[in-house]
Image 1 (tube, helix red, strand yellow):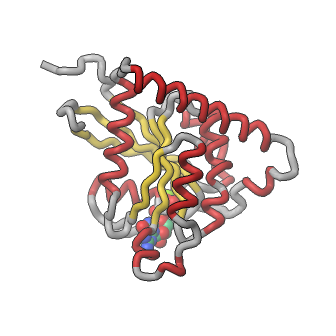
Image 2 (cartoon, protein in one colour):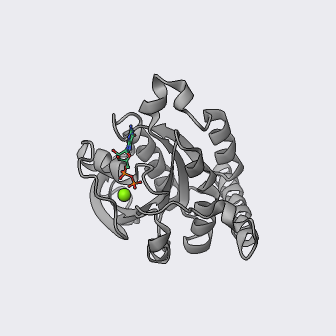
Length: 225
Ligand code: GDP
Ligand code: MG
């Protein structure tokens, strides 16, 4: 018997972030456990479905929506944020600009995704900073503080070596599962309230960006995906 008959058959998870931060590599690593071999950039949106088993033994299918980070495809990619259960928001630990653009991507999520979409911030390419700390352009402390401020989970991963990829994704799925199961404990309700409050804050952040000069500072200006 299915212990959780109300569990949705499919969860939609968006992969979001600047060009070349490793979104497609993360997808390939998670689904096939291999390094992405093609250098071809993602055009628009690609999706792939994978079955998953959760800690409580329930099963679901996850559809990973892999988006191009290019401004050229912005309206196309953000149109797909609707009805997503979760989002992985990537930056490259060795590229400061990609971290500076995270607030832009958050404002897009706040505008286009559902209020209860669960967001995880991912600092990718940890292999490059492991043996060469000077390559790191965003400290773990700063990234964690930022994530905490906006109510996001945070993980550092390497899509190249696979380090922490499964663990990060599994944490996101467990959080989605808890929210889908409608955990009615007091703690869960408090957390939910806090998370929605954070979402309202970054919705504000999006509004602040609209039509102001400093918009430029948060627009991803690197293209191409
Ligand atoms: P996307 O545009 O965000 O989908 O990025 P891609 O997955 O296409 O990766 C862009 C480039 O970064 C490619 O050359 C990848 O091989 C490389 N890359 C992606 N993830 C990692 C990683 O974790 N470590 C290293 N060293 N390179 C990576
Ligand atoms: Mg890609």
